[in-house]
Length: 286
Image (cartoon, rainbow, N blue to C red; front, side, top):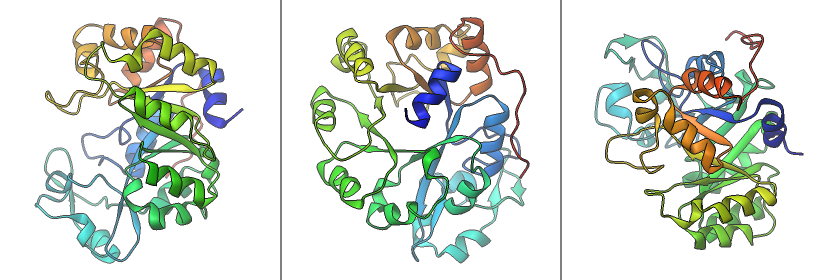
């Protein structure tokens, strides 16, 4: 059994924290945000990846530069030294001493502590996959990407033994990735704008579970216009006492990505969909 499935069997519905849990003076996609998410009872956290112009990998979601740096730049055009020197601003638009961190440091900080979903690395798989092989915490990593033949071939040919989760929007994508051999697919992420999408039909959900795959859904609300789960999301959950999270569970999702892990945890425990954590939380300090 893979580590993701083991965590699910032990804990029930899994909670994934979007970019960690940030706010106040804690920056998104930093070790403090990731530690905060674990203390909010998340089972795993999501880490976005960028590559500096000199080939180093950092935890950052490109496009967030105006929010984090206070200026319109492209972090990917900066050297690693420039990135590490860059002043950052917190959620109150006040300067903070926190800095953008290397992926290697993040994985080292949480070795043996939490599952880690690595997002947006596929843009750099020509060098990132080989780099990922050097990390001792590889068994904790869930790697994801869109379903593109060239990406699946790169992953297969890399020889990297890592848990993989494709991002699925259509039945055609699902059929293609499930027939693709040589990669360690342990879960699927389903993205749907409405409940009529056949990828969330009972038959498809049941078939995926029969294959031993876990099913991931994004409850996070990126904006009012970006729809990841038919508006059955965090915003409506908070407004309606968790009802939308319950709807996602009833559809058959096993992993829910959220910006509000503690609220989701409390809801799932109340509904007997998650094992209550007795000690919060035997994680190391940074």
